[in-house]
Length: 203
Length: 203
Length: 216
Image (cartoon, rainbow over all chains, first blue to last red; front, side):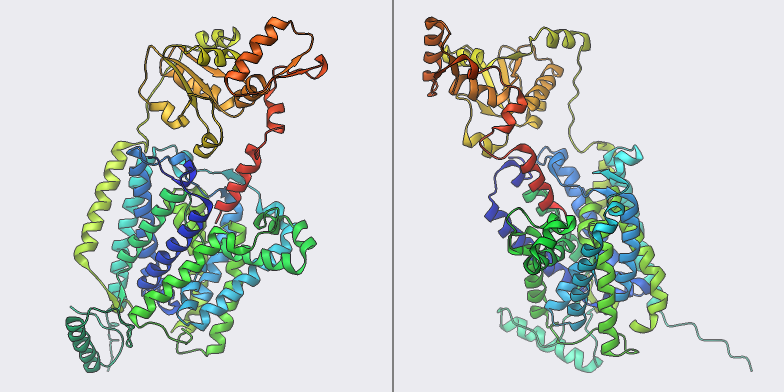
């Protein structure tokens, strides 16, 4: 039995939509559990007081990345049928910067804003409204900037391909970087909790 | 060491004691009144990683969020001004030949699930509150404006980059997509650059 | 804010160790797929292709099946759902990935087919790279099968004996032969012709639909 099951015709359209809801429920559950459905907690990331965003995201990436690698190695998953987001170098760098500014301003990302709104946070609702407005603005502007948005396309380029390293090596490096980031995060948070050094009073 | 939510220490200990007694006598799921502490971000992250991996295994795709917003906007524009939407290459991408309702879109259903899951988790942990998360130094109104503006920026940035922290950060991160990693780095650069200017908003 | 999270150092440490092990072993493993290596004699392959010894016609395959050619393995490399809709009798569905590593029978004759023939040709190459000698593919794919075996249109000028032979073959598979004037008789269809007249959704449109739905 080979995965992805949908790609091999084992799941119907109706089932796939049901799966979407179920996966979404689990996704929302864990986002809320991790506390990043709360803008105040999430924004701590940008002031080095609460790095839950980094811990949660990297943990998720590690888990799924290792899962993909080893399931494929075991012959249970056909990695070539798994969707890899396409690379558009300049639009994604520029879009990332703009997104990041919005992220710090809003204190939530698209996914977590839905969790925030679901749990009664008015700022979550405001952010969702802003996102819809932003998408609309982009859509209306698209005829003018479409060329830019489609530029520097590199297709489904992966890090192993781009760096000329084996897939496993890149996986190992990402694990190492992530664990290093976790250690750094713990250190930063401990530092943030420590009371500030008293100022020297000169008589 | 037990971690308890914010509150007067004596009161919190009392709350912890009663909830332990409750747990001993009842095993029903209860909607809590006082907010329970969040889960470990590492564990929540691994939970999301498993959900993400399931998406890959079942559907051959990852999770996402911003795409759902696009579907909603495209559908709305198409309903209000069908010929305008059809002629716009961006909107057309989210409408199939017949102009499907957003409910048939995988991402939209996933986001509906996120709302359900987030609410369920918060209800069981006593973290549902009709409020605005903000720093004490600003007003509710200021916070809501920030959220809306931040959301708009994220809407534009996400569409330029063709994804957000869920679609590119998590899905692209796990599949080692080059553009996704570029996006995430750029997003954090943008966020950390903007954060000092917004320090007052979160204090 | 960080103090309000319930931490579980034991589990977290265990997960970190699992990550280290998983990552370190990945570096050793190198590739996420247990790749099998194949090798080809390029000159030999070029010769085979030039002499058209790499493929069979639909009619030849039909005769092999009807005459119960020993150890004939017909492989369909399309998707499960497409196979369920229609397949050549006696065919087995084998995706290309499995072709790359399935156990081989050196005495068997393999015939691969796909919708148009391109993928089957690639599967042919894979099997040759794995050392299989008795392998062919249906050059016109399923389209050729449908046009030549299931619904052949025979010119009225064809000799009676030949017409009878074709009709018998077609009937054996449950198809229907038509006699037409020579202008509209079936010729070996090009793959493009087949693609345009395919009864079900074309590859391209289906692929576009899939891609659009999976973006984030």
